[in-house]
Image (cartoon, rainbow, N blue to C red; front, side):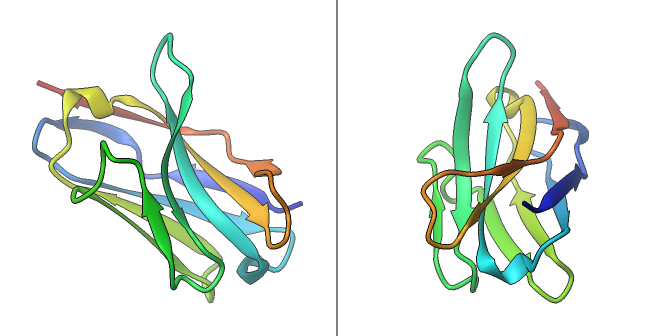
Length: 119
């Protein structure tokens, strides 16, 4: 499995922006499809965005389309989540996850980074 470490969370006012980063180590990063999930207090963990191993295909939850952008740099073993026009309901712990090509489940997870959006 690959080890994942997120960073970039923090406190921001509504309408502001943050960029989350997730650095991978331990295996060849480029053979993993990557995703971001989030979990708000008292709620289940929800899908936010995903990107394939080459960076040629992305997918987003409807709630973040047009505001969030997922990208990756395989040379830096890093996946990013650019979050613009943040809203209070984006407040959550954001997790990075990795799924090896050819498998069905995300087998590696980071520890999460807190994002808090004030109104």
